[in-house]
Length: 496
Ligand SMILES: [Zn+2]
Image (cartoon, rainbow, N blue to C red; front, side, top):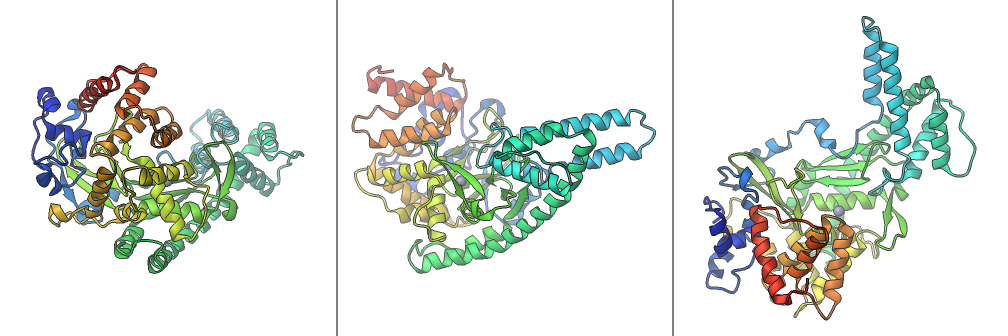
């Protein structure tokens, strides 16, 4: 089905149930005479349709095996690009290279001016690392202050007195002369390089521990026995682990599905490495091992890759664990992940099972959402089903009916517990909220599942769009959504 070119004219798009299905209905046809045929295909074939007519070209997406020779071309990513959005490996390193070069090239007569400009930028950078807006996603300003104060001490700079380290670090950076900033950077770069190397080495060893603990969790029944540790081992082996300077990191821990890189900010305190904030605003600390385990659990999830011809020719990861990506970039150039909250919830659940943790401050709201999704339908859905789908092996060379079997089983259970359109409509609603506030989107889903009087999901989504004054753009996806929204309006009796 998905490997045939599809007529995507607007008329066809809004009237052909097959395309509605492909674009997001996901299970419109379930329970219909076509169900049999659909069941033989992958349930996420809808991802193979370009969402934007302007970027459409010959597509013919073809599934290929993750980790195969064809796919690994994708991983030959420029080392520098691996850090995209995660910060630089060592803050100040390129500055030193640049000013050393400037000084060596004596024919440049404004050397001092240029050096001064670079050092001024460095001061701004250091001050920025202490500002609350930069200390997000688990990065703590106190930790950045500790790095700055510690490395300033190494550089034998005089430290200001005071109780509050962030304030002390700000004072210090502001008062440093130009040459002292350079002295700080010359001491920070080797110190940070050594810390990063040490941490990367430790993390490399933790891959083996992760695998061992996963096996133990399976043996004692904390994880379903069907989980294939061979697949997990291969995904771990291919995983690149990189540590970036805490001063430049804008996220403490991340996994990039496209490059299969796990990125962590360097930390001097592995037991209390990163900051977690609850939806109620309470903060706690998570250990490096826990954060590593969470990101590694993302990394070892089921992987589906397609090769696409035409405009976006190349290999695209379209599924990672329970997250499904559109392989045409969205408006901001990034592809969006469907079922993101579900993937986060099951990832943290798996981490807890693997690390034998009874409680966790990680992904609390998402796990509540998962628990409600599991139990609020007409019948309960087992945790194992979610875990099996998350980690399943996906072999593109096997017949379609045998690919992604655990995901299809999970979908079937959700369809039975709710209705065939439910999961996608719920996610559509969440996506509309997540565009502005991801946390809010999870809370809306929790509220929805907990409430007895439910507004139709499509109506909730449209309400969000109306509140933000968003126009529906004439993309194919939205034409379909508009139709669904009109339907929602009709059902809700014009409640919006
Ligand atoms: Zn996560």
